[in-house]
Image (cartoon, rainbow, N blue to C red; front, top):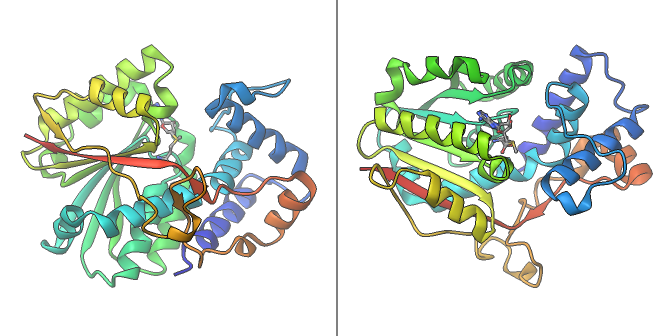
Length: 303
Ligand SMILES: C[S@@+](CC[C@H](N)C(=O)[O-])C[C@H]1O[C@@H](n2cnc3c(N)ncnc32)[C@H](O)[C@@H]1O
């Protein structure tokens, strides 16, 4: 089902219009943002003039949405297809509460919205979102607007941002009602920064401690042993039982199994739906969205 790319494309247009960004004539600037993201994730690929991406800046936000959000949203769709425990958790009650830590643009909402439309699920999912970058809020409003034009079943009830308000999320009365947490591509981003990793893991464990028994935690990230090892190190294992490492194992598109990637975005999601932005960035700057990746996930259960 084509869902994600047209939605991400609409969101990019809305962010561009809010911030007077010229999507077509600013190609070199987007190219630079894409290069900076590559260098951020893969330090050996840093180009001369590398700058750490600043996601408060709408150009970096658009570059992230274009390059990375579609595949990551679709991984969430795929995981909810595969993990019976998550599917049942949503299907067996009239409403569920999700908490996303490090949500960035809100990629997880798009992936879950696609899944509930695909499976025609008539249950309510409410979200508490958290990120250190407040400037993603404009994007989240647009995502909420886009999703609510198709379903009334997904709702953001709270958004927390920045290190200074961590205290607030920790004191949220809803913590004991959370059914599942999603932590998507956060650990690999912060694992090289001891300070960030330690602040994030303290926060995570505080939240888990206040959540009820049986609450699920879904970590999704780059399929590297070092990332898996960090997850197992930072999660308090008296508090949370973690599953073994899981990955798509080519069950989606077995014919592509020669690649180093183990996951491919659904073929129905067409790059052409990015329209002129794709034409320009692909043809003139050789920048395509990532459509394949090597991913894994781990499901935790609060003891
Ligand atoms: C790679 S992005 C992933 C965004 C989104 N989950 C996705 O997969 O598209 C990592 C996100 O984690 C956020 N982040 C990093 N450290 C954080 C922290 N200590 N607290 C909250 N958010 C954090 C960043 O601001 C960024 O939005």
